[in-house]
Length: 116
Image (cartoon, rainbow, N blue to C red):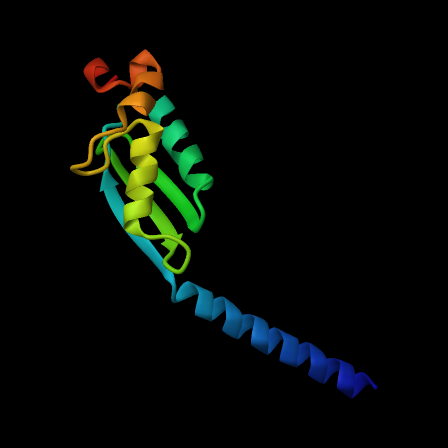
C-alpha cells in the first residue's frame, strides 16, 4: 500500500512538471512603446493588462515609456494587447489611443502634460 501511494505521488508530480513545461512554451513577451507619462499611468496600464485574457504579467518603465507584457500565445496575441492599451487611453507603438478612452484619462496622464 505504501509503495502504491509513493508511486502515485511520483506519477502526479511527473505529469504536473510536464504540464508546467508545456505551458511555458506558449509564453511570449512583447515590448510596446506607450504615451504614458507618470506613475498613475503605470498603475492604470498594469491594472488594465491584468484584466486581459492570457496576460501573465506586465511592467511599464515610465522613463522609457516601454510596456513589457508577458502573455500566453494560445489565449491572446500582440494585436489584442496593443488594442487593449489603446482602449485604456494610451498610444501603442504607432497606433494612437482611442479618443474616448484618452479623454477619460486624468489631466496628468495626457500627452500634453509631458513627463513629470
